[in-house]
Image (tube, rainbow, N blue to C red; front, side, top):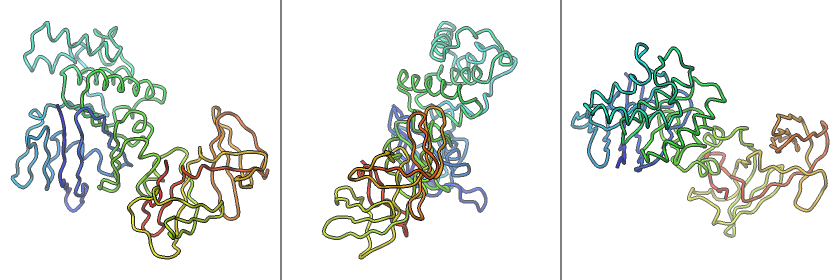
Length: 372
């Protein structure tokens, strides 16, 4: 079991308030990714969990046992927390072979030689690097070294595995391979994983939950697809998704139990069941209509429900085509699967599933209508 709970965690570096009242629950067996841009507080949160940083305020428990109680100045040592940490740098001993690197921590635990050998073989098997057991780090590629670092971490059977941007030094192809390996390790071990990254693709593809950070605060905690489909505010919506989400200015009004929205692209009516609990102003108010590019479907023939727009640019990108579109003073992007060519200034017709649209209050920036 390894359920982690952070309550009202504050961390300062001098006058810099880097973590602001962080409240986060990581359930046993979760693959929780801490996601956000550089400097948002995600790595500091990981270091607080690991014991490498001491917060000035707050409490942290693992399986109900206090590991941090800042009010009592109590901080359990990292060795008491039952975790292993894998850094962005591989941190392998250069004078030791792969086998010796993995065995180092196991020997400290005074395990038998037979048990150490068994764990080393199992860890190497999981990371698919059995053939490198007698090599030294300088004889391995970056991807192979990172696999050794992770094998070393999992060999001790930690109840909690912390990964701090472990794939950021790898090339794009290796990152894809390593994402697959980490997913498989999580399933095989059932270990609770806390993973730090600024790469939303890593977060969306591997996690069971994502904690999105913004300027030292937790912006949203949700399952990957919920975060993608319903970002809590405009900043979160702009951060999640590649290519980025389309924003169109609009006007909205809630009346007769429905939300009525109009923008240059179209007019929409949404049921109250699709709305969030955010308070909606009386009368007409400014809103932002948010549409994912993959939800903008392009046709060359007119039909009921389709809106005429103009092609501004056509960007074929191998497996997909990005099409920039204009209507009036608004421009927006469509992502089409496959290689499709449209002439510049060509008139085309777009259709957007209304249930996939998000609506935000322009003043508060908060989500008021959910996608489904």
